[in-house]
Image (cartoon, rainbow over all chains, first blue to last red; front, side, top):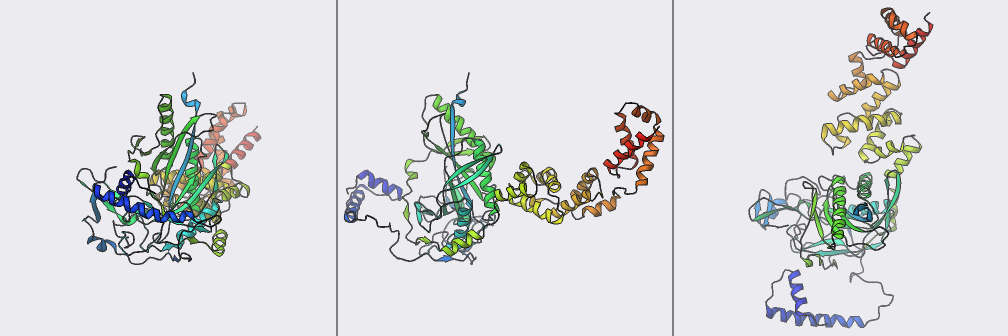
Length: 94
Length: 487
């Protein structure tokens, strides 16, 4: 499958990546190679095969609903701007 | 001339977000609690520090199953968690863990009652997901703030089929869901705090058309009233647009409860490209038959079952039964009072006419009956005093007023202190009647010769003389008898 330039730009925008023209061309090539590789799977006959969502045949283990100490504010202070117990972020416009 | 509004039919579906009453978050062991100081209930997973992995809270799974069984949903033995991607400061991971093509519960149904008719609303699905943090906006300035206490809170999303045909039906659906989740004890149902909120999908079409119109979604409605207003507003807006020759844009709208109108959220097209994918950090959730059986057998009595029982075995009217089962707290209050004194109708009347009114006066329109200063036990005792003829119904109103002033005193104590006991001594009544007859000979004569309206006057005098402490029924009978026997 061949990727259009516009598709690469859209993907980059969705992933919040800023790519210049050269990088877009580079990614266009690599994404094409990746999908070409995956395309080979399309040739496999999967009639009657259950879709698989995970490679490991295990069940999800569950956690009891018990509270544990959390990092709380102290754990957050180092990682972000902080004011009156709230994390400061660039202004959100809705 | 027919109004254009009569030519159209509205089609409504809702998506309800139900915050679960677990101790901890969906995938981390941080405390799940509303109203704590900002950023105090936060685990390293909730702020997406590198290397952290989600571990599913089994209580959230059990609660999802409770709701699934209560709504008669198809339960998926295997369901899958998916990542829903978007960038926003309240979502540190850059994706929300939700369920997409394999939710835990599939199709089911919900019965609602509108104008005393039962209508069935189809349930499309219920899935488990995590809530985001809370953005705090301030006027002016160039920053916003985020509180991550809510990040990772377990949610169930209930998606209905587009089966509602009026704002009233949508409101009733939301109300019925609220009653259900509170009876199941999986959510506190507190809409003001956002524990229960709804998104509203509305489209309109010409009556008789089988094709669905383009729908809009009004987000984050946190009261039944707002949901109704938003549905009504959107229905009229769409009809007027179509009548003016315009088309309806598929869009997300935001309800402004002050202005009583919604406005379009002009979001970019790609904002809805969520790029769902199965979460590689989480294996498929497989449910054992043992777990399903345990949850199914442990279901409490549901609101509709309770309502039917109140009608059939307690003899309550449809209206009383519906009011008493619209809220778990109210039903508990009623049933707890019944334990003290077994007069369902009497207690129902006091709760519906007095307690539910008073609690709103005391604590505001959205108050819960559990905030009421008068206990269920005391209400029952009051009804018992009336039934045992210790006080008259009229005196009971005064006792009730006293109970409001001092909730520590039980009704009997008030009656004794005030000396409000009905006089059992028949001599008191006989004496009073004799005195009244002696005092008002003219009125007595006129009453006997046909001016029957004077009977009320004489009764009033008897009650006045006995300070209202005699049983009104007995007094009426005895006065009538005495008058009849006079020459």
